[in-house]
Amino acid sequence: MAYLLLACAIACEVVATSLLPRTAGFTVLWPSVAVLIGYAASFILLSRVVASLPVAVTYAIWSAAGTAAVAAIGAVFLGQSLSAWQIAGLALVIGGVVLLQLGGSAAV
Image (cartoon, rainbow, N blue to C red; front, side, top):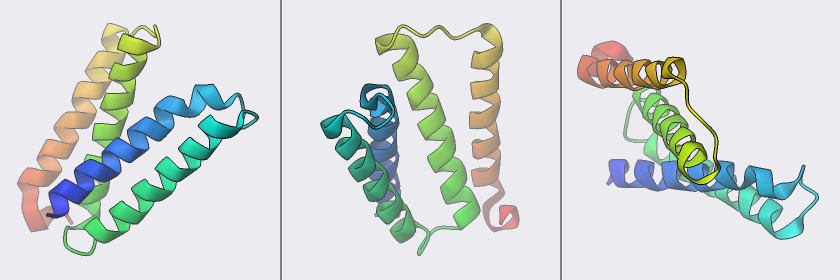
């Protein structure tokens, strides 16, 4: 159940972050409201996840998955390019999360 909540937290954060350009500096009402709701929902869900999973692993998964998803959305839907260095950086971030997860309780 904790991993399902974590996936929902990641989804809320990714949607909110992806909508940030549409807020025009928080001057456009509805995208701004959606961003604030998305971030609030993400943090509420994240707070519930850390009650049952180690905070280091939880945050690492949340931030890495969010970063990778937003980078992919930027590349696919927002016309932003990813260089080979950026792709390598994303791979390193994801690799770090995998190592934290494999480390189990020793990683905390």
